Length: 241
Ligand SMILES: Nc1ncnc2c1ncn2[C@@H]1O[C@H](COP(=O)(O)OP(=O)(O)OP(=O)(O)O)[C@@H](O)[C@H]1O
Image (cartoon, rainbow, N blue to C red):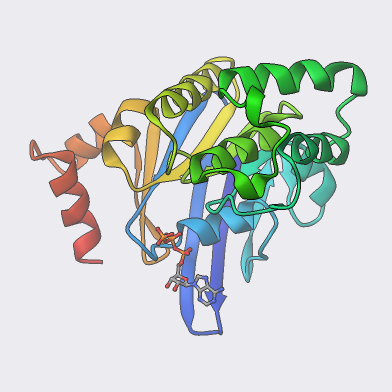
């Protein structure tokens, strides 16, 4: 479960990237975070994961405060950043093993977990190669493997499907659904409305740092009493703010 209470973040004291945000992502749910470019999605995710500090407000993950109980809070989630161009000099296996070390995954189980993840993402033959030599999608997949190696309760994924081929995209979506259905939480940002509509139990629509709507797609349509396409509704909603 992720909870944000009155969270605000400004850059340079001027741009309010996130403005008084209140948000709850309960267990057992895939929550999609939608918004146009510059809406504040990545800033929100960076605050949830403890990379950036909010100016005001509190964030908890499974009840652990990301500031005052940082280590415990960080054990709760796995995070995939929006850019997978990290640790390029490491080989895939070295990177995932490094993540397993950081999260203290016992030696007895890590080999099996790495193989299972590599198998699902078709990465077995690439584990011995440096990440530098990987395509964008392969880099994305190795980041996902690193984020999931400690089997976190909460998944936080920033634009995770970008660059994945159809099979890997299908696999990740299937894994997200399995994870939520087993009573845990998935929070992910996307620009792709169709993906959100098919995959998410609920969505939050954000623009200029404010949540404009939070709920199911059925509630979204009902709320705006609209039978227009989702795309038109989204454009309309984010246009005037
Ligand atoms: N490090 C920074 N310094 C100054 N301003 C920033 C910084 N990072 C983000 N911003 C600004 O904060 C606002 C929100 O940006 P953010 O990256 O959170 O949006 P986003 O919804 O993730 O956008 P996108 O979909 O394009 O990735 C934008 O106006 C952006 O220019």
